[in-house]
Length: 151
Image 1 (cartoon, one colour):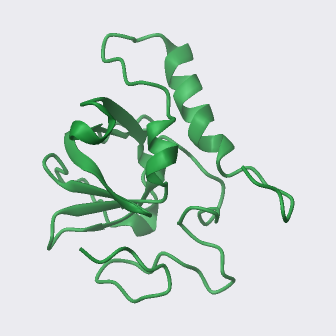
Image 2: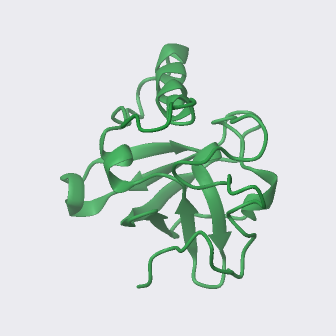
């Protein structure tokens, strides 16, 4: 499968804005990042994303087991399969770059390594601190980084 080229035209909304920033790893999404809300331009529109493939900026990360559309609390639970030992990860809705419903694929603006390093998904943890920790992990990836500084 071809990898997502941020400069290429897609059937879904264009992931890069005119100023070179946009909804992809290394660029902030339009407006303030809200980890728990799908971006207007993502093309989610309350669709059932269960079973869709998930593509990071550098390759496939798995399939969606569960998708939430809760107000200010939306997320995806992705079964990563064998690439990180069958682990499931929760991706806040704000990480969704765009959705291609024709090929049933969700494109997120994170790399495989960023997903691999995310806090582990725990379906039994209902403590608000868990959600804050998870949202904070993804929010931190949009923090301004001085030029020439590696993350």
